[in-house]
Image (cartoon, rainbow, N blue to C red; front, side, top):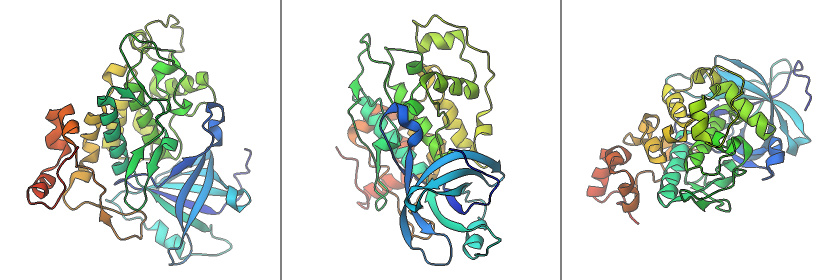
Length: 367
């Protein structure tokens, strides 16, 4: 899509919260070859004035325009408004700093001032945590989902609950058994699949979750190649060329090692300046070339990135002006879940929740 980005564009502000999860549901073809045609649906609030009227807003995200200290800007298209071209500004919300831009822009409407059409909040942490908890359970049953992507995540905006769906590609992985490597939507496909491995593990799902996480932070997947080869090139351009030892673990049958030698880029340089260091650390543990070194789903749930969710009295809100609500059930682990990695239980079930179970104020873990 060719756009004249020198022309002033009306603005849509996309606020990335650090406390919970996505209000974005992706729509579009399931075919790998049409991945560039993805459309997003959000519950947005009208930009001008003090009314908080909401609208189901559809938009396509286009080319990256630029990045500043407080956010990144992309070209966007609104199909429901005759493909109107807009600027989509992504602003990472940080509770340590006050965001003055939004209330100021909501008070302004003038022909020589950029117009704020809509804004919406896309939260991150609690839904990422729920994705990982779901995978921990699925993997404990010996099942690999093999198609983790936004299309296969259902989100209830009222309750804040996320559920993994669509098990059409799922399969119990048995060591020594051959599996197809052409699986999983391209953007979310782990490098071992791109190297043609047929004896992969559940760690392909962990890579996919990592890419979904980057999409929540960036507005588009970190790796978004136009073909399988292009996808691998993009991964290498950001994470560096895998070593011979890493390639051997990705696919021991792969015999070509004449890849261009690219140095890895610092992962934090690929994200907005205020991205929490804990988020960068978790992604470093996910985007390991060697599947055996990637963090497991339950260990990821226990990562310090999610410590905020385990604080007593923690609330969430579906938008900046909604009354804060209790978090969705995050700690009601079943007996089976608690048996997966018992050493993590003291982290996964915080002390205040254990006390609530003791006095009957919270639901005990159930099966």
